[in-house]
Image (cartoon, rainbow, N blue to C red; front, side, top):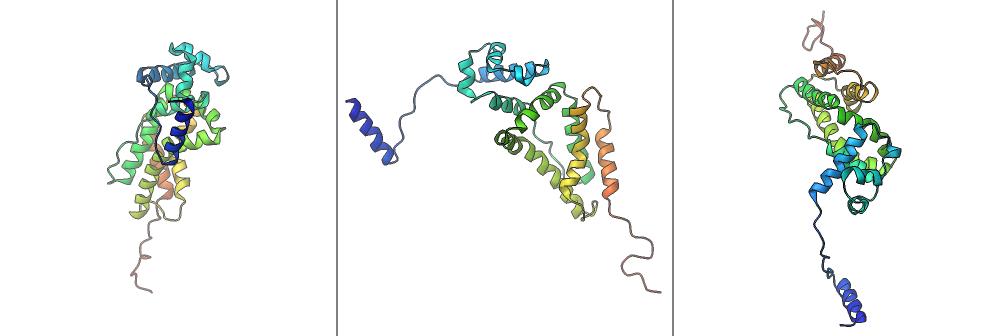
Length: 226
């Protein structure tokens, strides 16, 4: 078949919804993917600044060719995003019985992640870089941050429904009060050890401030007027 006939055949296939045959090639290597992401994490953990974290250096550290990186990622920012996501863990299951216990479990989850040197190092180094690129930051938020935030909001909504949390407080603000202490320590005070019992202390302190006021004796519904 001539080159022109081949081109016409492809054009006709496209017009009728036909799909061009898939090109054959070597399957993507999971081992290479892991080696590349591990190389990024290792370099960041060793204190290499983002500006010095070139694709060439990552390839050398991973023991692969630079072309291997570009077949998988469009550039350094996309690779850094996947390195961040590789450290993510699913939120712990919540029993839904005690709002306080659910909140402690969620905050303790953040506490444990803050104890991990690698997670803290990557968070401090990469977040500002990714956040400066709206599309990447939005993708990270959708794939990692949103699930944790929704789990926390769910626990807070149950607290409002059971009367353990005041209904006149903004839940997004309350969520930030639970998460903020862990993020601040991980980002600003990485040299400090996070003490045991910190999650309970944070949760109890916040809940104490947002607990509905108890009705005074003799002022509740049904109290006879004098």
